[in-house]
Amino acid sequence: MPSLTVPAIPHYQPAPPTNEALDYADLAIIDLSKASTTEGCAQLASQVREAMSNMEHMFDIADIPFSQVSDEEKEKYVAPTKQTGSYQGYKLRQYWHIDSGDQVENYNIHRDVNRRAHPEILRPLLPEISLFARHSHENILYPILRYLGICAQVGRVDAKRISSYHPRRLMALGLELPEDTLLNMHRWDSESEQYVRFMKYFPRSADNEEKTGQIWLKGHTDIGTITILYSQPVAALQILARDGTWKWIKHIENAIVVNAGDALEFLSGGSTAPPFIGGVIQPPKDQRGFTRLGIFYFCMTDDDIRLAPLTSSPVLQRIGIKRRFVRDEEAPLMRDWRKARTSAYGQTTLLKSDKERGVEEEIISGVVVIRHYN
Image (tube, rainbow, N blue to C red; front, side):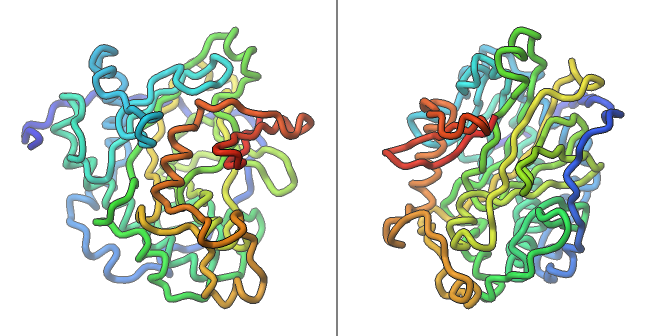
């Protein structure tokens, strides 16, 4: 059991917001509260609401695995990702093959925080991290999944708001399924790999920046259905817009960026929820030299869900279904998909597929499972 004595937490001081004029993605905003129901918010204890009222505190906690744990102790909690297909634990620097430029560490905590052991200094903080995970799951993920019955696009959440990924308008296509269809695939108590990630990018040398073309993380899509990113001030995240250009994501205090992933595209038949292609590059000049600390909640369906299109959707029946797999029975279970993708990410040889756009393909078992964009 975690200790009841909570240690003093050093304050993590992020970089000030950039003053540079960047080409930001134009994300419209809509009101997420209209999609919520009484059960979502009311079930959470007052401690959760208090914890979420101060995201600064969560970022202080997020920095602990990196700044307050020795390299020797980190090694004890490294995730055996390639062997298990799970990120639970540390991903240390230089694990990913990013042209020798991987200066990223992350620490991943399953929503069941007691599923595995953690560094000693984190143990007293596990109750807070657990409450944070539950808040992300029930107060953010669930309303988004309900909202997908009306709108199958994604973007930015600001307190009670969610914006569309489309820069000008919402996509007026719902799946026309019962609103709990997707909720029942993402149960809190199910066997699945939904987890909190703390992620820290460290400044790189000029030599490494030159070798990698200033790319910190190549453009890619996420494995699961929904990824929730808590906004932080260092500008580095970009998305591939519909016109083929890369746009910066603007930091908004206490906001959330919401991504659709591959699993959601599979379930929606590739028609209503295109995955978000995002990458991370060197920050603008006035933010270089700072670390970049991120907090994420990665959402996936229950492990036993088959990632085949929801063919009972009247919308998909009308507009057609784009299948990644020829037959629905060939579609993988969420468990198999996440394990294959997770164990191979950053470890497989990338093949050039589109030299003009700088696109490389990651192939697993002879199937193109992801494209990386430079």
